[in-house]
Structure formats: C-alpha cells, structure tokens
Image 1: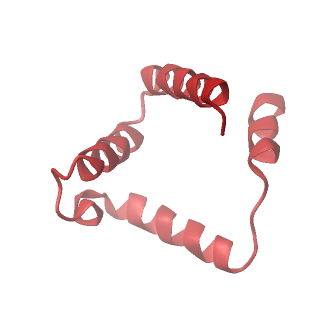
Image 2: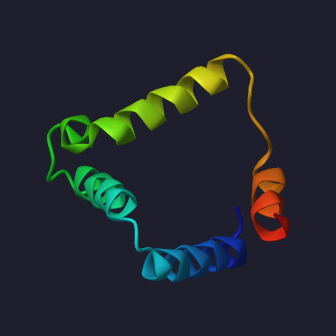
Length: 80
C-alpha cells in the first residue's frame, strides 16, 4: 500500500470511527489499540462473548473459503 493510499485509508477509518454508535465495536477497537500498545496482556479476554463468537465465525468462514475481496465488500456496503 503506497503512502497516499495509506493516508486515505487512515482518513476513511477516522471518519468511520467518529460515526460509530455501537458500543461493542468501539470496545473491540479500544481493545485492539490497547493490545497494540502493549497495555493489554490478553485482549481476547476483554471481548464480549458476542465479539468472540463473531471473530470465531469469521475465522471458520475463512478456513472454509467463504471469503470475498475487499472491494467486493465495500462495494456491497455502498450499493446495498
């Protein structure tokens, strides 16, 4: 990913985060941030049961080949 594309992605993520109202997503993002800063020993334990189920479901989908390309996902969101 080039510098310009990386900067654009960062701006899009900041805008998306600012618009979030779902506490569980914000909690998940906060846990990821703390983990990346070395402030959390086991971020998995800080997740809600629902978050864990969703992550495990995503891993299972990936292992079974039930995935889509990033642009297909984003196009589905903007067009659906």
